[in-house]
Image 1 (cartoon, rainbow, N blue to C red):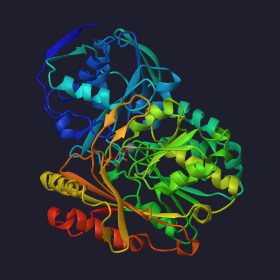
Image 2 (image 1 turned 120 degrees about the vertical axis):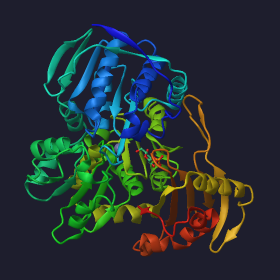
Image 3 (image 1 turned 45 degrees about the vertical axis):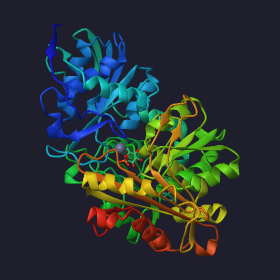
Image 4 (image 1 turned 90 degrees about the vertical axis):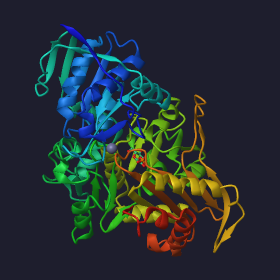
Length: 544
Ligand code: G1P
Ligand code: ZN
């Protein structure tokens, strides 16, 4: 095997965001762009000689091309073995599962998650570490620093690998194993959930499901697990064939983008459970008939009921949520007498807590829930969790949620996104908010009195690392909150996210419309941030 060392020059924009490096395909296609980033990861890893790496992606446009490049670079950098999903496919949680199961050094996941795909759309790459989780900030910062000084990369002179045939082959100096992308992951799910009970409930028709794979990676996973193994009716999985451009849609499971599912769930004769996942399979949306479960509530409900399911029978050691996620899970943790951690946005912040067994379950308001079974959020896992829960409780989704609210109170919750805002206008909004933080505490606005206002700073309880400026929080004395932060996953302009929540203990007030119940808080958030004037936008682009 001939190894070529090629000269390159640095790109200034390879700083990984909330979840890896995401850019337009056109950006990735610039000469040596992908190569620089991959080499920088290898350089920071140091000794990869003889080590095993997992490779796969969500199947979006450029996935296969990028994989061929990484295979040749891995060989040139001395990797001993590669484990690759057949067709170059692996969902993000399945990649995490493989890294852990086969105790590999780590892996590359090729995905831009819920961002659209295609020649004019987005691509992404991220490195996951030995624990199966996204590399921590210390690592991604080192990779970024390395990309700024890189001058050469190594690539092996090998033909393209056949990604479609399973089995083990010798490729240059490495051994390469192409595996079925679903099998190991499905096995793990079977350990966690009561497949027998779920399949009985499906068989007798007590349980019916519609899963929208949104033309993305979970299609093959959901078909195999839900239809083939559990016996859900054929056709329960819709939009099941992964497409390079996700059929032209946004593979983002929310009421706006998963509209086919939302329509079905609001029509007469809707299935008991409706669910969807995103481009790379780590997000989930949960619905019942004519009922939408907010991700924050879903996390709280999973935490309150986990002990009913085989994989969690021994109880939870603790829970965590990202800072902007509603405080619903905090109430459950309090009632159960377990710790609840508040982390910055992004799954990487849960890794240390999971590794140290401080938490078992964790989640984010952005349609992400997961547990210690892998080190990523996991869309299908959440769906199986709900299926198992419904099979145990024999109640419709809406009833499970309402019962939860009666017990713990309801956290009305919504996120308002202003997308594609001019970057300096968006920075201006954040600076304007930060400028008010010192004066806000004690101030009264209508029925809301400010209890605290700060820019969230996180000190990791395990390794002591500090992450600053993770979002402006304004808390009120009645427990309500608003949070402002800029997205770290976009590829164009800036996205301002405004997160709003209001707690309501009294069951007679649990039936309000979410936007109406938050109206006063929304108006206050808009006025404190001056978002409309500064962004020149009359309304949010997406409300979830
Ligand atoms: C968004 C979500 C965040 C999630 C991330 C990756 O990041 O808000 O919770 O972890 O996508 O799926 P953001 O664009 O807000 O930085
Ligand atoms: Zn995703």
